[in-house]
Image (cartoon, rainbow, N blue to C red; front, side):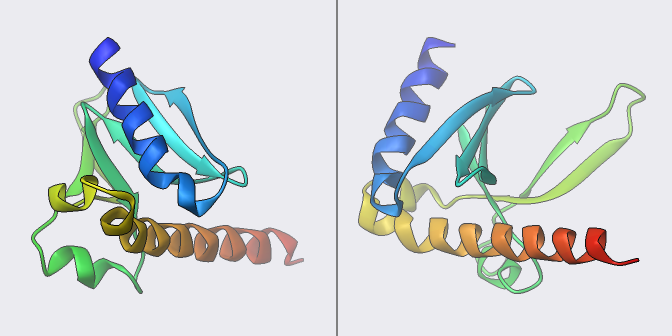
Length: 120
């Protein structure tokens, strides 16, 4: 896990210009949070960024795969996080547009959940 910790530390340094960003261990990896909202995840030393209908095209155009995992029953699950381009992991300025896109998708999802839960 030492390698994973150094990768996560590197990501947090790159993401620092976004403001206070935190990593929390979860499900054998890490969630990356800002203002309590998860917008990225790290699994097996790979960064995945939150996507939605508005942001997915940028990832699809680059053939960046979605994050998948297998449940205990063997069923393959795909969630709305896509691999970050490797070239974006070099410096803050190259990661920032991708991270901002993920943050915006996470905010849209959080708003939609709030609106849905407030309906009678």
